[in-house]
Image (cartoon, helix red, strand yellow):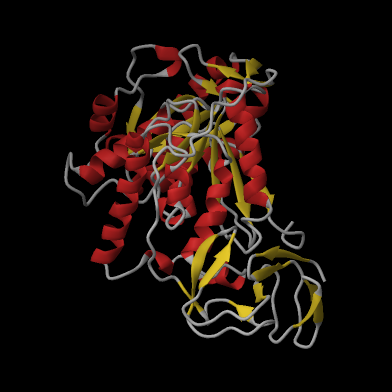
Length: 444
């Protein structure tokens, strides 16, 4: 039976059945309960109220006595509150030595943006135009037109479920504009058009003027805006959108890949559908990749602030300044407040699937999640969809919900994504390519 020792527990790589015997620390351990893949088994007696540790850190407290060989999980472990020593900057590592330069073939936009893809986007200003935007992109997929433009990676619809029923120029409105602008300005987007209904709160002119949107290659021309109501219906809007994109194809196709240094990479990372192996296999591997990228002068981002909860003290110690560390703590405190006003708790995450995969508490999940951030200094903490300007390891404040989290990270400029999963996740986020990494062999 394969297993790895984790303090007073063992993290199982194969299912165990009651009555099986394991060699543990020179003694024989008899399995009492069925222990599933990625779950935990007690190596010694754990008394009620005693700290339960994994990765050398607290993941919870025993809610009842747990005998040796017993299953350690939600039925006998609780995520009680505990004090964290933030020790700001105490363990901040020195900048890594600059490694031998590495390169990739990408797109130099000529304005400080560097892409890994070459897309044309149809950006919907409101949920009412989402289907119409998709119809435009589907029209191109249904023809061989794109085959005539081999340097164009595709025509992608950027859609959402918002854009109306919100305060004009209010927080929700400006957050939506901020996020859509992040896609419009994204290095992987060579050109775009905006598609709206016409009467929505999220007017295209508000988006264009407040976010300073410009069109292809830095010209001062405002982007093309197509309105369903002005065109006279969906069919005419689709026709207008197809004509507009057909005119953009030649100039986008003229952009060629060129050799770029790895410091031009902005890596976005996420873990979703996680299991008990996520913090043992895939996430630490991504952390090593993050460190290698930072040594090249690139940027690496983790998000999902509620999935940093209980492990944030390990990041504040790596902060380059107290101000950066306190920005992270402020976001943690905000999430505590936000969940409390709805009568919920952050430990509502892990999800049922996470728990089935062996994750017991949010503390355990968070400790595994932050492994994606490697071991370099925390150089910045940014807001949702805020452009990432710093080089190095960065935290973006996003919710613990994969599609929304990755959307913010891409809007912030990530030009490639790595997404780890132990249970399975189908999420992708064009225009940024998403590399999936499985945490266990059956999942792979």
